Image (cartoon, rainbow, N blue to C red; front, side, top):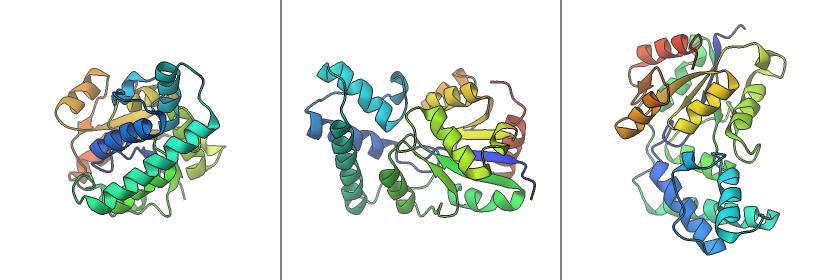
Amino acid sequence: MTTRGVVIFDIDGTLTRTNGVDEECYAQAVHDVLGVSGISTDWGSYRYSSDNGILHEIIEMHCKRAPTGRDFRAVRSRFIELVSVRSRRDSEGWEEVAGAREILRELPSMGWTIAVATGGWGPSALRKLECANISISTVAFACADHAFARLDIIRWALRAAVGVVKSSSIQVVYVGDGVWDIDAARAGGYGFVGIGHGERASRLVAAGSQVVMSDYLDRSRFEHALISACSQNL
């Protein structure tokens, strides 16, 4: 079956309203394992907007040394634990972005191939989706456990979705909520649709996003945005 293109979704702030939980648990994990407090949770201020990339820079900056495999394993484990505990304790902060479940379910029937690519570590990312009642069991998925840089994570998801050969010729749209997301889409030569409202939406527009939506409730507008994004030049 011929696909109209591949739509690759970020998770935090794009499919789920978990930006706050993510920032708090990450900062806590870094403090608990490394004893470092007051890190920036502006992920766009780091060279690589992935959990591994951010941690690498934090250790270099605050610990004045090169990170080790043990550092990555320990912070990753603590972060996953914190996300799990918070998800069982708190009912707020785990909602889907309105319409996300439906759009993931409907896009394939409209001719689109979908995938998910997040800068987060796999188990915590999947837990956030689970809390929002979003299933991606049949969807290509890539995360910080697959690659270091955001663009490489997106490429991993793309290859998993359509194969290596098709990935070089098919139309691709990345859907995200951060300036780092549009930067990755631009670097990969992909279309982009922004998700956000208020200040976050303003930042996306300033970064060059031609379309920013607050949610997926207007499915006709979202599909039109995807079609337009396939031919946009960021």
